[in-house]
Length: 152
Image 1 (spheres, one colour):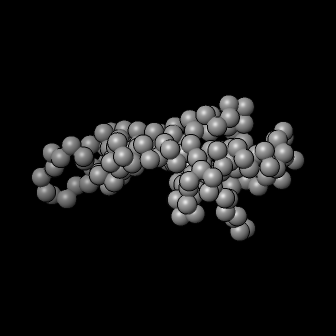
Image 2: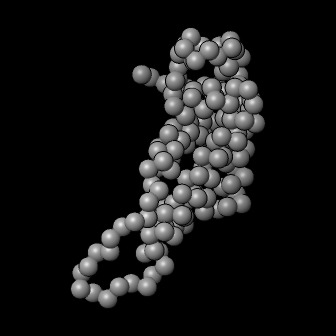
Image 3: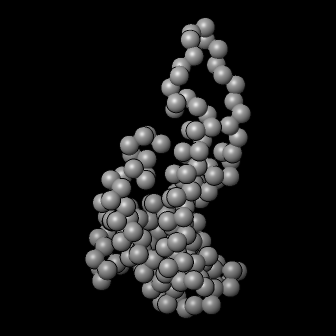
């Protein structure tokens, strides 16, 4: 199914930036799945005959905790922005923006109480808030939150 781009000109968001933000949101289900799946640190050591490394990044528990913290913070950002956009419709926003559910499905099956134009206005506002938040993180965290420094 072809995804339609929304106009965010009045919020000062270019088409390329919108595509970047949309791609970020589309990773949300993957992050949730990683958080659900990666819970166990029980792994056997590979015996190669070489001395064991004392590198702290080889600690399975520490590595798992770091990965879970990164993905959890990413999910929290999306969820907090959806709640800022609308406390009552944050679940619908996440289903629409992150899971790609079409508006007709949300209205007929899920029971979305808003009209098409009002919901799309809310989606635009969500992307505006997400852009503000991401600019803040990109500036202050210098990419550390998204794992650019540690290769996570």
